[in-house]
Image 1 (cartoon, helix red, strand yellow):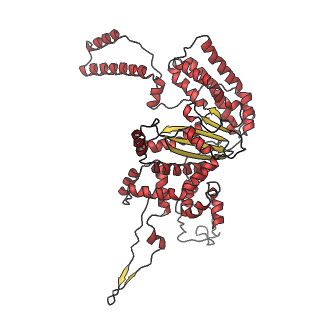
Image 2 (cartoon, helix red, strand yellow):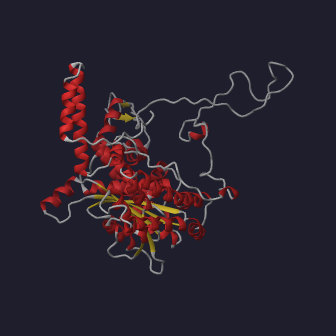
Image 3 (spheres, one colour):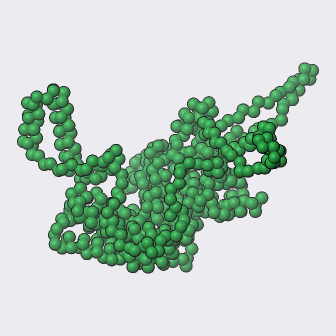
Length: 524
């Protein structure tokens, strides 16, 4: 659908509105059309008043109705980077045809069909001169629907002696007799719940439709059984994350029913409940962690950095400018998200499109340079030098423009654009730390993407019932997202941990996503 241009702003007094209603009522339009037009006019007036009362912009409202992009197509690209093109790699590859071949289905069953009449070495039935030999096999893919969890009923024969009455029962595998739920079932439920946001009740309904009922209460029992074996890995990941040189944090609201009731009953000073997402980077190694409870992001980061070994350099912290993200104990080098500053200008564009487009264009050059640094796989020092050469002049130009707007009184500090400029100036040091510190990012996008997993869970399941439920969710989501960041298969990883939980508990640090395969082989 083609997006229409923004309408021309029209201001009407109350008397003009009443005259317009009278004109519509006295027109020759049908009565139903008159009523429709008058109702639409009243709705527009009400909406305008609500926007003014809530200090909302049309730009913010449009995002609520589905216009989500903040991209600016007009960016100044001052680089002559064609002389030094990005190296080829995953970020530089073009799009493929989008179809999946047989090698893209590692979990599919393989069935080999031999030719019904011919074998290797037979005489060709067509020419009767050559012999047949194997070439690359053909393949067809057939996909069937089934429940996410399947059940097999093992019916055993029983025989009774007609004389002595002794009963003889057919033998079955040991795991069939002792274990109703296979480890694969536990992992599948956990991935659906905490990896894809499928609530227990919704999965219960789907299983019932497919004829394999698994109640929500049974699903909870299975994920707690999984979490009981892997929680030491989560604790070990927290200790490992403390060694990271870069810590990116962000919060999102959460709900824990029992904790909310407890805080209300105790009349606690702080009743808010949050899920904190933490991305710890140490070189190419990334650890993703979740913490749900009554603590803010800064307090959860303090909890991680308690395990930071002495002698390591000052950790770089990336977040937005909220005070909740500040640590209270640990010392960090604070970097702030430039995207948050940019977003303020996007929101203010309705009233000042020319000025806001100018700022967004200046910031676009910085993002352009950072993209090139990523594509060329620059080291932290190389990236810093590159930004100092390419981005510093745009940053200086932006600061000069911001100060000039206030000095010449072209913009009022209390209007939306003035507030956006004030945000930049108030947090200038943190927003421009990438020009002074190697490894300092320009935004917090990596954490915002991570925390969408918690938002998806909140959107579908709405809440956690207990603190234990929140803790189980944090454990499993942390392991899933860390596994994905390491390029490993979450299903295979969780299954390996679950099947070897006794070994895992003895030394959790040997079973991180990046080292569990070789250590499992050594342990066996």
